[in-house]
Every structure is written in C-alpha cells, then in structure tokens.
Length: 378
Image 1 (tube, rainbow, N blue to C red):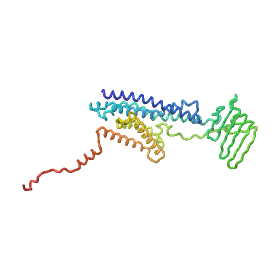
Image 2: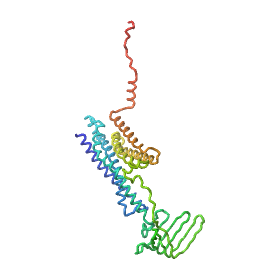
Image 3: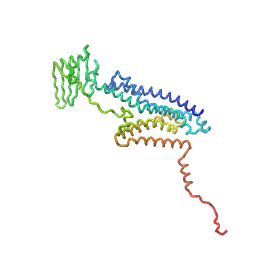
Image 4: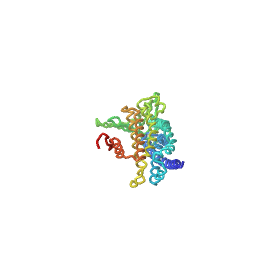
C-alpha cells in the first residue's frame, strides 16, 4: 500500500539519521566522562576504550528509544508542515491510520530494545564493575607512575616517585603524604623498595630519609630522620560487597524477588513499554505551529522524553527504598498509555470539552412537546 510504504520509508530515513547523531553525541560525552574517571584513578587508563564500549552497549537501548521517538515525532511534524497531511486526510487516512505503519516499522526496534535492556544492560554493567574492582584492588604503588603524584585507594595517602629503578619494585626519591585524623605526616626518602610478607601484606621499605609529623590538635611539629622505615601499602584480602542489582541477570532477578531486584526488573521491562508509549505520544504531538518554528516539535519531544525517563527513574528509586510497590511502574505505563490514547482520539475526532458538555446537557434535558389533551374542551 502506498500510504504505509511511504510512511515507513520516511521513518527509516529519519530514524537512521537520528541514531547516528545521538550515538556520536553520547560517545563524545561518555569519552569525556571516562577520561575524567581515569584521571581520578577510578579506571585504568589503558582500559578506557573497553569501559567506553561497555558503557555505550549498556545505554544503547535508551538511545534507540529516544531515536525512535524523535523519528516518529519529526516525521509526522514534517508531514503537517509540508501540507501532506491534508492529502492523506482527504484520502480518508486519519491520524489513527498512521499507527499501523509506525508500529510495524518500530516492531524490530522494540524487540531489540527489549533484548538490550534485559541482557546487554546487566552484562555490560557487570564487566564495567569487574574492571573497576580489579583496578581498585591493586596496591597503591602499582598505580604510581614515575614523575606523577598518585592518590591511594582510600584517599588518605599521596605517593610520588621521581624515578623508577631498573629493578622491579624499587624507586628513587620517594615522597609520601599521609592524613590520619588531625595528624599530617610527610615522609621523603632517597630509595624505596617493596617487600611482601608471608601473610600477604605488602610494605614499602624506605632508606635514608626524613619524616615530618604535624598535629593540629596539639599544634606540635616533629622532625625525625631514619635509615630504614616501613609503610604498609597493601592488605592480604579486600572486602567485596554485594553485587548491585543492575549487574545481575534478569533471570536471577526473576527467581530472587525482593524490593531492589523487582524494581530493577520492572525498570528493564519498562524501557520497552516506554518506547511503545512514546510512539503513541508522538501521534498526539504531531502538529505544527507556524509561529513556533521548525524545531519546536523536536524540542517538545525531547522534553517529553526527559520527563518520562526521569519519572521512570524516580519510581525505581522509590521502589528500591521500599516506599512504594515495585509493580507501581507497570501501572504508571498503563496510565500513560491510556492518557496518550485519549489524547490521540481527542485530536483525531476533534473533540472539544465545551462541545461535549453541551451535548451531554442536551441529552439530560427533558423534551417538552406541544400535544393537546383530548379531554380538554375546545
């Protein structure tokens, strides 16, 4: 059919261009964010590209949902702007007739969004968390680069090595600044090397150096020299916390229901429902105001997506904290769908609130007929 094929062709062009633009913007933003994490010591600089790839894969479902919404809203707005809608309306194709080709075009994308949100999202978050944990478990001196100041994992110690030795685990001109409560300690030494104990603990052994200790509470300053001094820089074991719900498989969340797991599972399912509802909302938003400009419908679609997605995250946070039922968001999607469907029907049938009120008033008002009573005299 000419009508459906033309709408699908227009949607495919708009959807492809939107995906390319959004992916380029998001990759740039995520790259800057990942580089910032690497500079702070949260991510290994050599694994920036790997973390970036996992991050893009995890957020691809959200990008596809936004691209699909913008493509539908932009296509319908262009049809209105170029007066093509008048032609389709004269041919008997109303606003609701656009829903069939739009949902037919969006069906593969909705399926892909469901797969990405249920499987790719936890898989990518799990690998990112493993990379971060593996980098955090390394010893403090393993992160140090000669000639650069490096903060420890707990943020209470700063290391500096002027020049690394040819022997692994040794360095020259070592500086350590430590903060413990109200006591500040600054230690410098000409040489340093790492020694591992049988218990698995690591110590940094400094040779030929000085130590300056300043106490804020006592307001004392102590300077001492040493020929050999040991500083613990690593522990034999590290505490591993419970995995976050976003890193757990969807099947595991389904078999282990609780407030957090169920909220995470409903949020993943909600991405597909959100994408479907946004298609219906795009039908309601399809209009053009000549005074508003060409970009007004796209800006309205963007703000609508941001509001919808933020409400989805707020509902997820409330459900995880136990303040509301985890299944509340399913009802929220149903309510949004009903409101969007009524909005589309309102525009398609040209409903008016005052006209409906007048119609109901005429229906309730009793009708008076001028009929003569046969018993009355003439």
